Amino acid sequence: MIKMMSLLLTFFIFFMTAAMTLADDDPPSRSSSPLKTMVSNLKSTQQPDSETEENFEDQTNPEAESVSETVASDTLEEKTKEMLAEEPPQPSYTVLRLSWKIVPHAVKYKVTVEGEELITYINGIEVPVNSVDKIFKVTALDFDDNIISDDINIIEAETNPTVVKTTTEFDKMDYAPLYPVYSWVPKHNADYYQVQLLKDGEVVREYTTRLKDEDDVYDFYDPEPVNEGGSYYWRVKAMSKYGFALSEWSKETDSTSFKVNAPVKFAAFGDSITHGGGAITVPPSMILYNWENYCDKPIKNLGKSGDTTDQMLERFDTDVLPFAPKILIIMGGVNDYRGNILGWHTVSNYKILLEKCKEHHIIPVFVTPTPVNPRLINHVKFIEPPPYDWHTHYKYACDWIKRQEYFIDLTAEFEDSEGFLRADLSTDGLHPDIEGKKIIGQAIKEWLSKNSLF
Image (cartoon, rainbow, N blue to C red; front, top):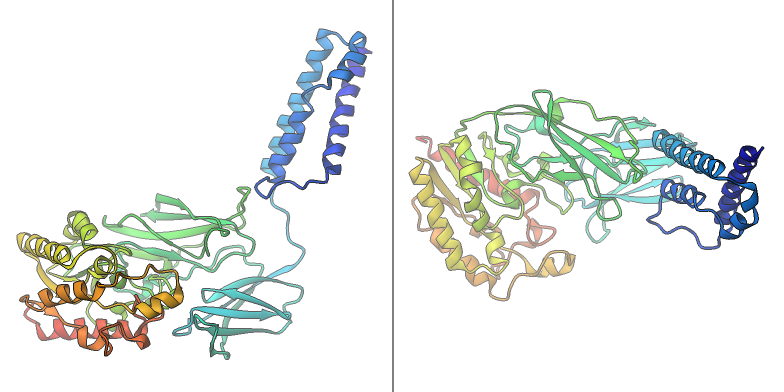
């Protein structure tokens, strides 16, 4: 009888506490998940109310209290296990995934579905719809929301997709870049993503992206070089902020697979302009804004976004030497002069790179760094403006390059009348877009063709 009353008391306190929690006027904070709230509520039932305990003191005994605590503890553990094992609820609506070709110079796309306007920064989107028969429209926009094209053809429409759609184009590249970029169409309601790189079928790297509230999560730049020989592919899985998987792993395809082989005849070493990408939002995983796409010579891309010439020197041994190129195209320097690195320091690093190449029987071909456009940089606002005397240090670096035995001079084609980066070649004032990448690719192609003895 005493045990029965103790059990009834435990469940009475549990439900009263739950009811009081639901009646609370203050909603849970944004960082509090339903799982955490439930666990917190369950834990509160383990602490007996002092007044209730006093009123029923004569009806309890140590054995009954022990049974009560055990029941409450078991209830907490069982509820927690149930919630962790529980699958996320299935949506009552249809998720429609649309895909289209990249529109040159587009920074973003406006997608109109069922009268609602949505913005995406990649050539695809997932949207919830009440009916797949509804009319939808995709419009390509520039940085200032001017219309570039409002006649975009949908190349693929899928309903309730179970895997994330990848957008990498490794199958269209002669070589995958040393620092691969993995990209995809964002999954509806996903908060973050897990990304894996596999070599010969085994997982060798695993990353977790930032939350979508912190960034527009549709790509991931691998921070480590892929310089060991073998066959690779990458995959991605969408996750909820509670740790539930919202998709299956993406499948291995030609566009997500690549091989790493050495040695190579030609390689290019540099920063983000070498690495690729453009129009602010298109990553190097797609070939449209990659200069190699406009050069018919197979060149291994050893560029790394954000590098200064100091950082290029630091990774020369680990990133260049494993591929033993016969010719190394050196394209760094823009992150020096647009920052606080003086021209003489950049040239000093050029000289060390030159000596390193000679030491390892590599022919260095220096390419003049591209200028920047401060007006465009100030307009987009997310890039740090260059110092007032940037052009002096830019010119100092270019002049040294033009005195070398092997060099490619791009200054005349990239500079406007003020010596700035031509506005028609860049969206953000720093990175050349399609026309600029064509100039780079074709100039390198012509130099290699003329110097066929190499």
